[in-house]
Image 1: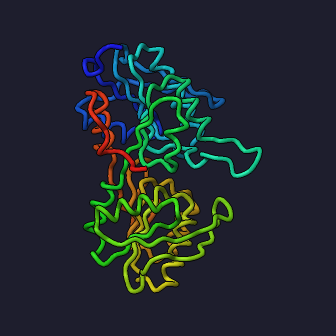
Image 2 (image 1 turned 60 degrees about the vertical axis):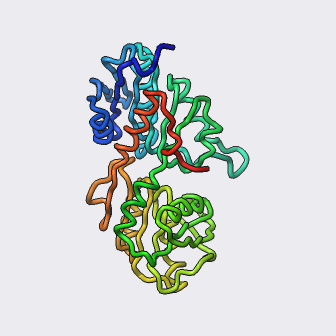
Image 3 (image 1 turned 30 degrees about the vertical axis):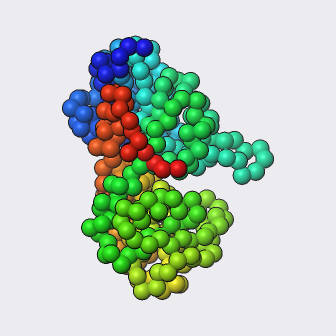
Amino acid sequence: MSNRSAMPTRIVAGTAHPALAAAVAAALGVRPVPCDVERFPDGELRPTVHGVQGGDVYVVQPTGPAVNDHLVELLLLLDACRRGGAEIVTAVVPYFGYARQDRRDRAGQAVGARVALDALASAGADRLVVVEPHAVALEAMCPVPVEMLTAVPILADELADLTPETAVLVAPDLGAVKPAEHYARLLRRPVAVVRKTRVSGERVHAEELVGDVEGRPAVIVDDMISTGGTIEAAVRVLLDHGASPDITVAAAHGPLVPAARDRLGRLPIRCLLVTDTLPVGEARAARLRVRSVGPLIADAIGRLHNGQSLDTLLVRG
């Protein structure tokens, strides 16, 4: 393989989040290459990508709602880049749909994360870049290298200004403990943990709280907010344990399905902080603040292109 740093850097923007792709390209001092995605009446897609021959190509396409359409489009874009003569093709998937399906809960289920990862590799991806994946097990499942970028420092920087020093960081379930500890190291604040049981896709039962929140503002930190069920259950436990009704919620990803708007709107949440791994319309949630991961992704791409370490940008397992 030729010297990567000598190749031209090319950014391909899928239709899932062209604004983020443009921000990444701008931070790198380049423009996205011309790309057309033709849509047929029956729903089929046919992308055409120009100007990638001999390039170090990065296809930016989160696979958020509509997950399946955006995933198939990403697969076709990867194939188009490979057939267009790209030297190296990296799939940049800021929000990776199917990440929550990293194992079977019962016999007869598919492992959706593994299927999606295999498909990306088969379509032509040499490497995958994701932001705060729901499951760090993705790295072990994927047939090509995976770079898992952390958005915690970006959000922690905002939380330092938004919340008082007396605030307690709250992991809304056991899966969020390690990210919460990362926030705690950066913000120098204590951590509390809610133990929950998921009843269904939207219903969550919170069982107990470990940690002291009485009379203190709480900052709930998680990797994503989808239905809002986990956040709702955590808020109710916090209030039951005497937390101040002045709660902040921070998450890397904000899919925010329609039901989440009403659910979160009923809760004493003063601020909902997310990043732009997915498009987030201003009207989708009141009290919403958005920080961009564009510079983070651009930094990662620059380091990959120049053969530099990404260690300081990665999720800690």
